[in-house]
Image (cartoon, rainbow, N blue to C red; front, top):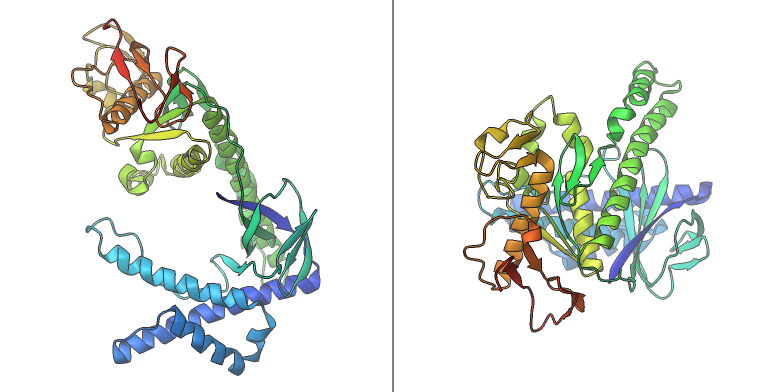
Length: 429
């Protein structure tokens, strides 16, 4: 299984210069061959594949001598990225109208976009000893060691951030130690007031890191806008970038810890499908609401669910997606009555007109999301759920799905090959 380890490099001045040269040469090669492909198509209606570009790159390195100063893999990977961008664009053209989200390749800029290059492992040109990383044509570079890097190295991507730091993402083929199997299932209702509410009644507060750092951001922006060119403008720009980076780090740390805990404690996690796909949730439309735009952007729902998905893959868990338009908040989790009045976001709790049960908005939604997620899992496994009401999960006996050697509701081992899921309504033998 492939896993990336991200570390912060501390290169000396000579190494910094070489990293910057490598990034610049990779950008130059990408832009050169993008212009060449465009011109060739415009004049002859033909294009160049990766092999043809690679042959021309050999000739280009003889003409432009400073391309020989950097790692050859950085230039070749730049060509591969260009080829991938072309393939993604033409594959996206075949999609249904309204689902297209991949544009045509653009020229890379020196400022305002990601500055990085990638190098591959071959003949031991990349090595790690304690807190030192060996890179081609650069030698040994020190880095801050925050975790043990295990497995076989595949490639390394070196990035220069806008704050002036250098990061290395080390991709390794490694074995991940999986969490022990559990039988608990959970539903999640993501929100703004509370970051999420679980079907167990747990409420996780929204840290709102952007809002808490807003005063520092305003101060840094003001200092940058008042700085004249040639004075301390560069320092002010770096300080502003570091403030933004701190917000990102705080948010990522919160999301990683929360997603890891949920994956460790639960076997099946049910979330709204729209939280996993930006176009289904219509986040772009939601952000147009100026009252909620900042809070929605600060929440990072998509990143959180992405973390849940790949960590579930690592540890044999299941993340079940529920449809965006499923009325989780409006449906009573006891009798299934749909109350249209609950569309009003100000209504935080309500009594069901049918059964009279008191429902807390977010808890009720998470319970319904869990029930609907389990129903979809049973349906995908070919189990007949006809006539089963959308009652709360405690009315069901639920076996872990797709998890080897898992325990069912009765505490017995489930053989995934023979029994994938079993849902029986309470009170029915």
